[in-house]
Image (cartoon, rainbow, N blue to C red; front, side):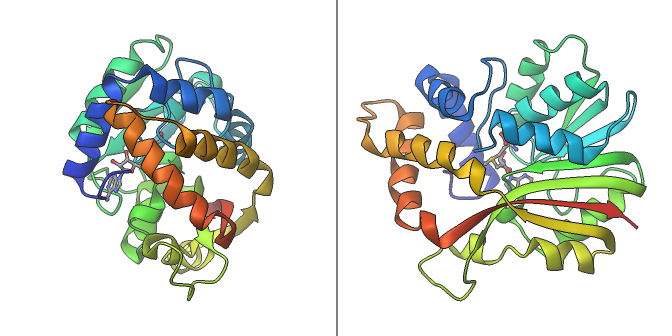
Length: 250
Ligand SMILES: C[S@@+](CC[C@H](N)C(=O)[O-])C[C@H]1O[C@@H](n2cnc3c(N)ncnc32)[C@H](O)[C@@H]1O
């Protein structure tokens, strides 16, 4: 994983360009088809739950916030007929998402630079927001408020991320300890806030990290990054919980 800055993510994504092994690991363990380029841990079955939670109709406007290479948003838009706007702060991610979109010819998609807490989209301009495994990079009141701001009243949000079982446990990464989706969404004015544990997603996640941690990355920097992250994540795997958070803009 990158250092967390836009420049760090740019380098992380540049390294992925040359690494089929990186994408193969994700797709095998998460059950994803080759066109769904993921840089996270959401499985194919998990994606179906996210799609259901978003309640999209054809023509609706979907924001994929911190979209990375765009795979999940493009897949959701292709299933539902929604129009997609992807936002990420890493230019390399946006560039790769625009290229990937060419494989989803039926999808009306655009990708723009923007921040989790400042998308530059007009207020009330989207019907749904999806944020896959990214809110933990900036789980601040400002990020939750930005999601609420861009949604029309009645619009839906679905976030996948991790929380610490004990937010005081310093063995868990600080950015994960900072995540409190229920408080963040409620304080931002959302209704029907539901935060569900998703232990059934974790078997695939653990297996992917175990394979990454055990492999010899050779001179592939994307695999090296996965290897190092796998070693780190597995140390505290059982101290975190996987969540799907959903809510309706009030
Ligand atoms: C683990 S990746 C997930 C990407 C994508 N959602 C996926 O699931 O494949 C986290 C993403 O969050 C983006 N990100 C991190 N902090 C951000 C911020 N403050 N504003 C916008 N994007 C951010 C990174 O550039 C990266 O693309």
